[in-house]
Amino acid sequence: MDKGEEMEPGGDCIGCHAQDGGPSYSIAGTVMAIEDDDQGCLGLGGVLVEVIGADGKKVRMMTNSVGNFFSSERIAKPYTAKITSDGQEFAMVTPQSDTNCASCHGSTGKSGAAGRIVAFDIGEGGASGEGGDPGDGGAGDQGGFGSNSGAGGENSAGGATGG
Image (cartoon, rainbow, N blue to C red):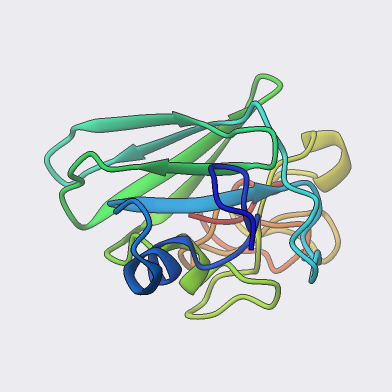
């Protein structure tokens, strides 16, 4: 396995590093270019990831060339997060306690998350305020940033998933 900051986009960063003795992170994940990337190879670089702790402290990270982001800074839980890509901001509105983003934001999504953390132009995924129409890119307030799934829900921003 390749070791380094560009390894395993979409993988379980925190879990793997805990087992294999890699650097320890307080939060880690990957922003993907497409939502249904089972192979984890289409990470998106240059996306700003901002995590806001329960104490109001902000931890800002920029995704690297394969979309990975990570930090060892302490994050007060529960936290919220947002990503900014090409001037578009997508926010996770449900506070979270698990800082291993891949534990919910895998290729299929778990614990109410729509799937991968994805950033793309709002023109492609649409946006919704209170509930989205199927297929417009709105996603519910279930721990994700929204998605291209058309799930619809309050306080959602379509076009990106994850956290």
